[in-house]
Length: 104
Image 1 (cartoon, helix red, strand yellow):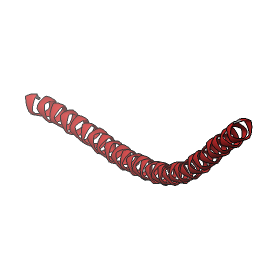
Image 2 (cartoon, one colour):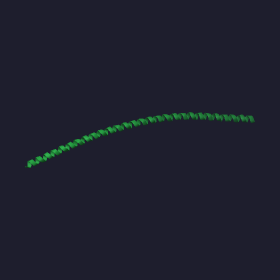
Image 3 (cartoon, rainbow, N blue to C red):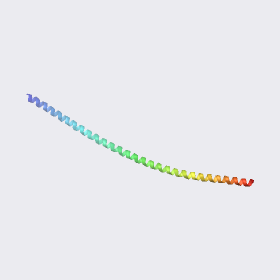
């Protein structure tokens, strides 16, 4: 009688172990699926960040080119203005000399 009770308990334990083994297998599969999903998401994020850095770098290069172009134009404008200022000062001096020689 005791043997039958022991066998019954052993059968229940084996059933429980099988059930827990299936649960562990299911959890293992879910963890693997989650890991795969996270790896895919991180890969997507990495690609997105790389794309954004590439775009940012391109924009910075374009901005640097624009600044250099503006600097060149500014230098040309300043040179032109200095030339006009020099010509104006020369004209005023010449006018003053002409007026003074005419008066004297």
